[in-house]
Image (cartoon, rainbow, N blue to C red):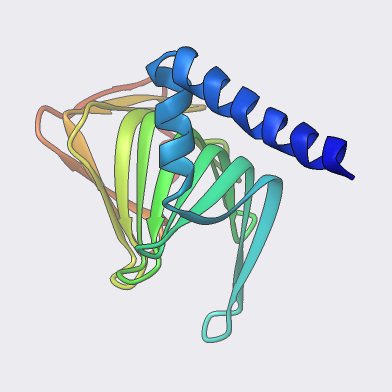
Length: 176
């Protein structure tokens, strides 16, 4: 019986020594995990808007919910109503404000073949408005559009370009 108690005490002391001598990285990680309510790996979230009957699917390599009602996603893949796909390395969703802040290099693809490339995006899900103040590059079958920033309206279905807009169009049909 006593050897079990000594074994448990030894394991606890061993873990404490490893954390103490392992450097700041492990200590910061362990302290940071105390702020999380829950976390998971390889997750899929589904959301259905009952008013518009549209669905959003989110796949992430990992997700962690913090005590302030924010969720941190790593390696995010978002599919909105089958019409838009977004890939990003990191995102934070605030459940109190319904705001998604996407960080890093973002790739956006629409069902009609448009591909977008930009860095960082803030999407207010309540107002259905998303913005980036970083350079945007959109590639279509007909050409390329570049701008210093963009606003995405109606849940990313319409785009308004901000500043320094340049377009290179390969052909324009004359049958309009």
